[in-house]
Image (cartoon, rainbow, N blue to C red; front, top):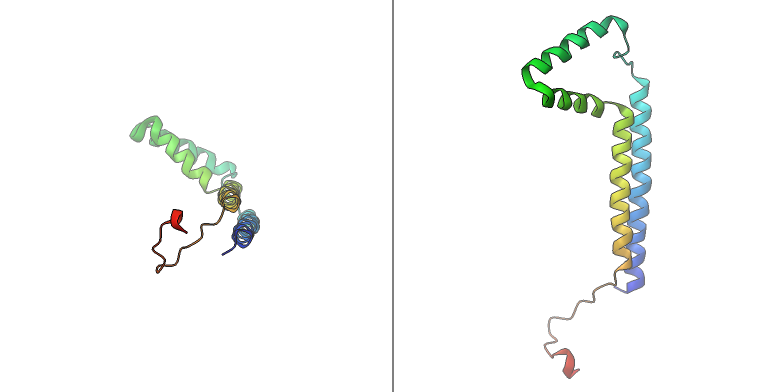
Length: 117
């Protein structure tokens, strides 16, 4: 494979990953915000306060941190951000691989050392 073709394939893969990540994040955010959010219900504030107190008694501060992390990962904005961040990292990796030169495969029948050629 020629180096130009190698570079072009990696760049194309990077753009595809980036576009698909942005589309997937938009869909997740849009579907997540359309559902009813019951956490803002004022009648449930006492329940959440009691739940947090109980979690603190049983698991301590680490349990409260893990519960907060778990609750924030359920939000559509956080999920969309993580999808975008992951796709950007993978796309940057593809763009980095596009800068590396392609490694040419040697034919298995050619056993002569490179200096003798």
